[in-house]
Length: 283
Image (cartoon, rainbow, N blue to C red; front, top):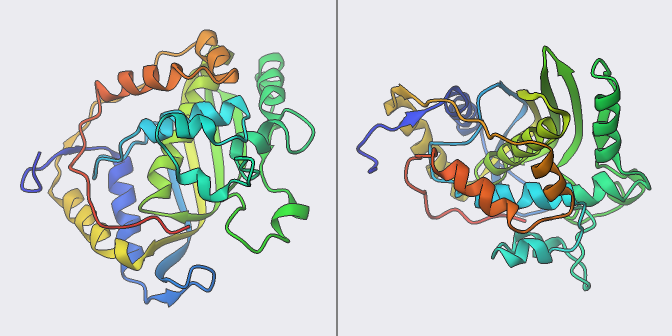
């Protein structure tokens, strides 16, 4: 598909393009930590029952498939990500290759309890429970750490309603070009795996971002995606994984074959616009 052809998109793509347009209208500031010029808005919310994968550019979703399994496994070693050729977590790892800000480590070890398994157990025993909460922010670490190695996504709430598992996510800061498309997709994959473990379907995902931003070298890419959204007219057909307890067990143990399986199923459906080259990840 060329940029001259209108591609299929979802309501998530439309909502995402509207957020980009709002950000691009803002006056730039300089972020003190990165030293980069940035445009940002406060308080963005996405809510969708559709599969929230961006079609306005090819995001290469293997990253999200691998990261979702890595998170569920609870590993802090970045070796699992490296095995698939992904090195973005290396910048957050110590000399032993451990990323203490890794979401899965925060879920399953950092607080001395396995939050992930406890939430699944709680909802399995009481599907009416409203206490399916997980957090990743450790104040004694994260409020005193001056570097980038602190979690961007800080809280999750899961509940079963009308026979479906719904997820709410709180993110303090989101790079809207690189981070958000992969983050929301990855947590949707986690949600579907958890739903499979509980024997229910995956419901809506509600995703709140406090600070949504684009760095200077992403502004043109943002304009391109806003333009693509305006050109697109055909809605995508829906997609959901068919996952159960077996896939959940494989994720819990960090089965390295599971991301490939998830990716293969997803790629049989995913037909995005072309990639957008140029922007570089800011850490």
